[in-house]
Image 1 (spheres, rainbow, N blue to C red):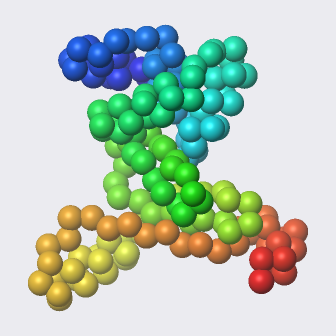
Image 2: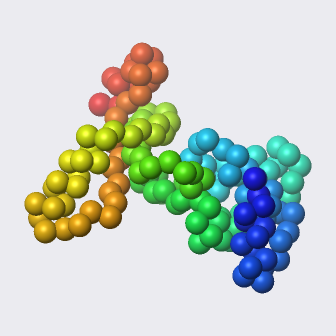
Image 3: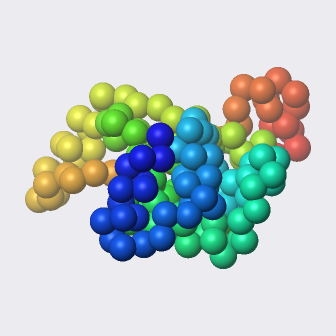
Amino acid sequence: MTAPFAAYLREHSLPVTAQRLAIAEVLLSSDRHLSAEEISRDLESRSIRAATATVYRTLDLLVTSGLVVERDFGEGFRRFEPARDIPQHEHLICASCGVVREFRDERLDRMTTLIAESNGFTRQGHRLEIRGLCADCLAHGAGERAR
């Protein structure tokens, strides 16, 4: 899973270190949107030592390489997800527990293209984040606390 990242590092004459590969492995094998802190905790649980600065620098390299996408969900820190071979997707974000769910809807793709064209634009992409409460938080009464 880390072979493309190791190749990227070699192509750019950057050191291929155990820490960089471990950070890449944690992130590239995840199906979640991870923060740098979550990645650091995962490394610690595997008894892998990596300085915070190393985690952040490696994340920047992963984004630059195109293997990882950076997301900002307005939490005051960045999250990262593998750049998978899936089409444009959107995010549902729970305001109570912070869970992020991905979704894709062809109707939204068509609508954004039509809106762009009607305003003289050629759509190259879009980003949509819907904030609200997930079903679990609603079921446990988080909706009342969040109001």
